[in-house]
Length: 225
Image 1 (cartoon, rainbow, N blue to C red):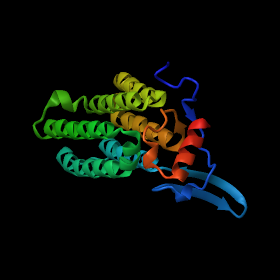
Image 2: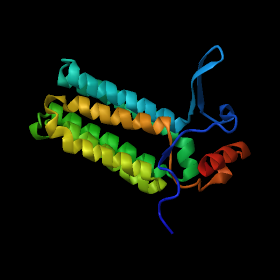
Image 3: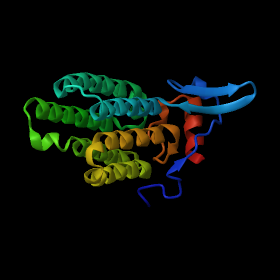
Image 4: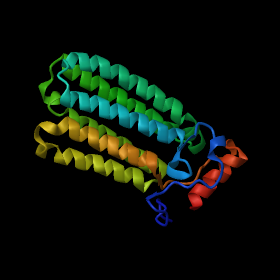
């Protein structure tokens, strides 16, 4: 038996087969002018966590690239932002990880974020030149590792693929010159938005008894599609 569901598309469009507005934490977006539908989708709490981290990554690395802020000021500011983002990630994903029995994945992500934050801050305040010149590679590597173990936990080829994209990002950093922070931000933002906008492969829920009948129906329909 294959570890990954090879008969399931890695990415696919979201489908609205039941009233998702009744599902906990789901945000429905429906933009239209008159009877003309412009954009319609929904975002689970996991999707919302991806969007949040994508925006935070864009702001953090965009600021480092374009704004002449003191590195010490940036360290304090982005440490606070990262801590808030980490707490928000835990809150937004707690329902999903409880159902999927993947709490260990979230704990590992928290350890990665806090560990990366500690190394970054120490390198700035203690002037660790070797680390400072490789901050982008450090964070791309940490995030890649996070996606890889998430892919194994969820049995998701999509997560493995995103992890490999981050490793590829590390390999191209020497060729982008002074635009390393922008490149890193683009890689992180684009992949997180991809995960938020599309459905991706993963194993079925392992604790369906924790879901309501309607939530189970939605989960099963999404998996079958």
